[in-house]
Image (cartoon, rainbow, N blue to C red; front, side, top):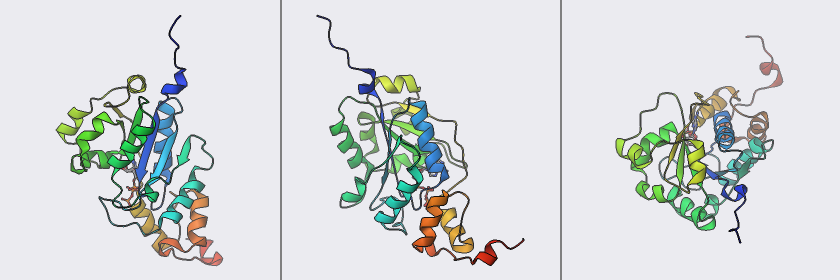
Length: 228
Ligand code: ATP
């Protein structure tokens, strides 16, 4: 009897995208869709963190950040909003998240996607060396980022999507696009000064105004339509 072949879909990669998402913006969504596309439509789990270990506490609480993510992802079935990190206590170390998903999906390619700024800092992350046995990396370019440390680049050899899909972990995919100069920090500033920002999904903008998040300036209809 020939051995039973697993259907190709059983090896479809699972992509994990952690972040503060305070708020989720256009670059997050473009990057997640690009990684999914290059990996054959793989699902991408967007995981807002509870207590970011590497940056200040978010301005919006977990429920609000989840709500904004759900609005921004609603038209993209490949994007899955996942509250796993919000339900854990203590600092949201990606290592714990990766271990959890690795346990759930043994043998399946697991891809941790990060922006080039996070990649450049990876050598400061808690037990980053352990990531090589847990996941691949997919690195999304971002303007004005340093290169990652040599030991990080060496630990994750650069490869292509086809190779990533054949191994559970340990390789690195470098995307060329999207390349967007967008950050949540600049968006929060713009909300405070102008009450809106073009880098936000309109449904997310409306949610921010409705819930008075980020000290967003309230523009009256007349100021909104004033000639420059
Ligand atoms: P902040 O400005 O508050 O630091 P951010 O815009 O960097 O926020 P995060 O939620 O902290 O957004 O980022 C989550 C992940 O998304 C990180 O891996 C980050 O590198 C990546 N990311 C954020 N913005 C971009 C971008 N413009 N291009 C590529 N990756 C990005």
